Image (cartoon, rainbow, N blue to C red; front, side, top):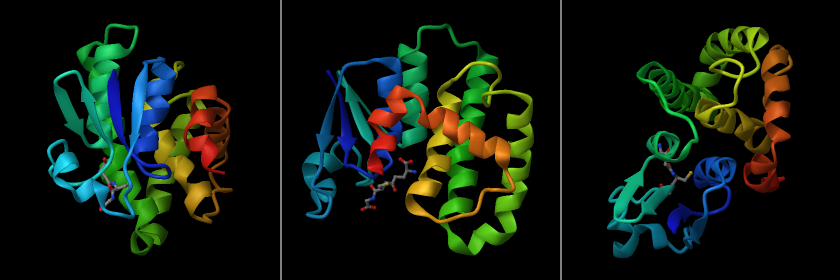
Length: 185
Ligand SMILES: N[C@@H](CCC(=O)N[C@@H](CS)C(=O)NCC(=O)O)C(=O)O
């Protein structure tokens, strides 16, 4: 069975959300991170960077949440993914991790950069229900999870971006979200 390594309230919950969406059986291996279990040789053999999430799927090991999401989409989603769709999923996954997260989570970047990203996001989500169009995809897990950490971890005013907040509400209604990120309270 696929193993997901992490702990509650970490980025492992992003991968867990998508595993629940895909209805893949998995084992969540909870590391004792305060005790430094993620820096012990056993886990470093899976992710030499000592960060979660990481997965082990058969003989295959993978780390970095965005890479794991894309791997799961390629391998387990019930549709064939065209190169163009894959490009869009990669675009949003990289945007989530490399562009959006550093703006949201690094206080010094927020004031200047957040409106630059949130305004176009708000416009896109005013035109279509999900990031890649009419259907929920892995792109929504990648970006939606970063956005969903805002009300959980930070007190940021998103009232200027009503399409983004409606989108976040819609994602939060999904049973797979509620079982994972939504259970943080
Ligand atoms: N870009 C990485 C970030 C991984 C990351 O920073 N994980 C944190 C938990 S959310 C971690 O493992 N922290 C433990 C540490 O740095 O010692 C990803 O998305 O997988």
